[in-house]
Image (cartoon, rainbow, N blue to C red; front, side):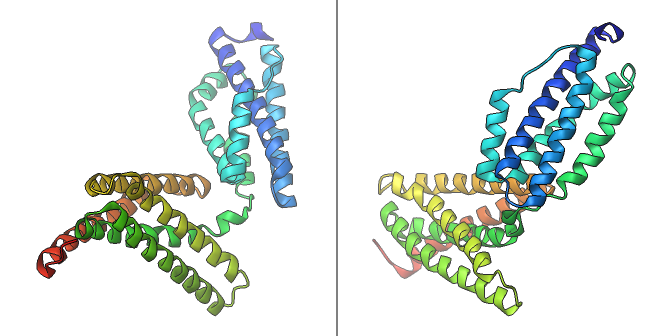
Length: 293
């Protein structure tokens, strides 16, 4: 059937055929370890649909293809590390770039319109059916992450000029951070219990873990730099803050279909702004209290 389409359309068909087969294999592999029978069924159904699209394109290309092993490995790994919802939604985002190919094929391949409709509507509906535990506790993770970023960023920035010693800053931050971790986790537990929720322990665990991991990431620069380079450590810490915010915001924007730019800018401005104000407080405290360490 290759003679019935133009060379340009044939190239687009082969590209889409390759993608459909690869994504079919990815869905199938993720379904094997995804938790929940409904999630497994949904992923298997997506795999079957992608395979059926591959068979349609094969009738036009006349070529038998193999899945891209690198892409299969990468998305399967992300599904294990970051959750299958994030992995499959990120993969489906890539199909948004195929609009030009569909418009080209619509003129030469009748089935392309049906495939496009299924890709845009049916698959998105199926993706909305995925129910992953970790996404149910994103609110708890955001609570721990945001609180740690704001509180500890401000504390470490204030300690930076007041103490002027990276080891003392790290020690002070560690004490504050661990104490705040237990405080935040227990507050989340009590809040959940007061609401009559049965998952109070799990909810507070997500909050506490998010807080503790953030504490470790923010203190790390002060342990890596020499004792006198507290300004360099502070700048490095602020860079870590921005990276954490960017990474987590991107994760939630993909997994929960939320806008990235606004949430990222809001969190980054708050955290960096608190750090700047706390640094100024540290300077004033050292000057007016006459403390010299």
